[in-house]
Length: 319
Ligand SMILES: O=C(O)C(=O)C[C@]1(C(=O)O)C=C[C@@H](O)C=C1
Image 1 (tube, protein in one colour):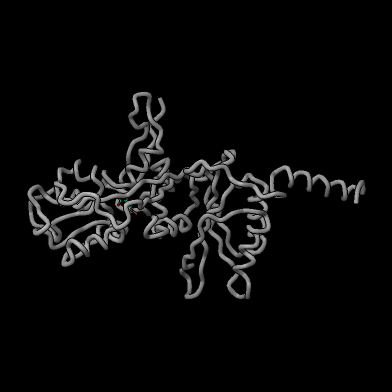
Image 2 (tube, rainbow, N blue to C red; image 1 turned 120 degrees about the vertical axis):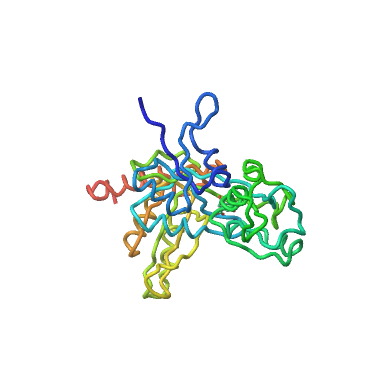
């Protein structure tokens, strides 16, 4: 009998991350999850569980429509043993302000939540609870659980979490629909250990980490030219400090297409020839399912025809 696969995520139960996991994890015939949930204290721990083979997959936040890239994820993905992204999912993010039963706005002097959640509610907090102090939490549900778990006074009287977490921990909603941007979404990724790369679907994305040479003019332009020359469209590019000295940056990049697409493969080969570091972080179906637009002259067929023409040239059969 095969064992139930373990999937790790940023816990405890009730995070947006768990909502994302429930959207991508396999389900049984009756709709119940076919994986065992492994809530972790932070993103690096969730990813390490996969590296250590204690989990088959991890679901972690990677990009937030308000705060941008999630550094804990972007940096950890390239820090240790290789991992790759297998799928992506977006979760709409709206918060409730919740406290122990009976709490009213006037009782709240301090609020705890994840720093990204706080960043998404700053304007609302300023307008409604300008005096409230912020107490950082390891996730949105960790302080919710802590508040519900005891009746002793804590350093905060309310939390910003998702409505399901407030309900499951038995907290009372003091204010609903708390968000500076009602359309905010967070993108999460399912991460696994690398294996043979899947086949393209025609609507894929590839994530890379690239370090451009730092000691010559135009290095960044050269790096970007590797994509432009092959008609590969970028959907995200962010710089992250390399960490070893000031002024050295790496680029976290998402491109349209799959590493098995000729034009994406050619861009990667070009990067590998010219950049000191290139990490492939996975090709996976894009969440909007929108087919990739392939510019003229960059389809797989165009590459195959051109290669066969060159073969003919080498054999002296054509010029
Ligand atoms: O704390 C959670 O609930 C998470 O899933 C993490 C996280 C994030 O890292 O951005 C996810 C969505 C919200 O933007 C707030 C926090």
